Length: 227
Image 1 (cartoon, one colour):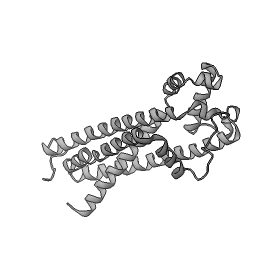
Image 2: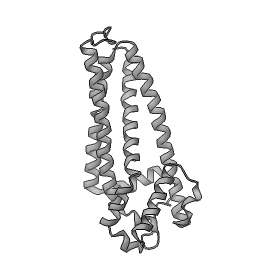
Image 3: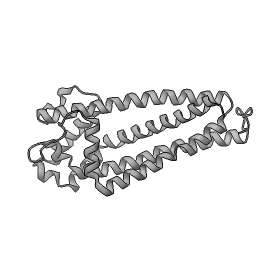
């Protein structure tokens, strides 16, 4: 195999993995139903003193803000200054994730069409199908970390991705942490892992289709080179 092809295939696996991860995060972070179920399970109505309708509105506003549809001052009506500043930092991460998803998507499409044009769909499909299995190890590690000590690794995550301590909120006074206590993020992490697995599986199925077309010289891939 040419070194260029090896490099492109490895880069493709990395790009597809990033796309799947961002999609998994977005799917769960924007799931209003999950927020409402979590409020019920964690007795958030009692802790916050707010009704279901009030928390529903606040959750919708949080989701709308994370989608990048609102200004930084949009959440002022719900949260104090420290909470809003932290949400601005969180939005920066979501915006970065959206950029990564876009760039990775463009790169993936270009590389895929490059291999299809060369008649290497079998090689392409094999790498997509098998290469993405490396992420299954990451998912297993995620679940192990959640089981072992979620608090510790959740803290490390914040220390890595945030340059300040605004994420250290007071559960006695700050509504944001009252609404979204640690159990909220524990189950969110599990759901993201499952969604990640779902998107990886979809990509692997597509890879399998590419592999079969190349292997059996299905029309349009009849010039497939031997692997």
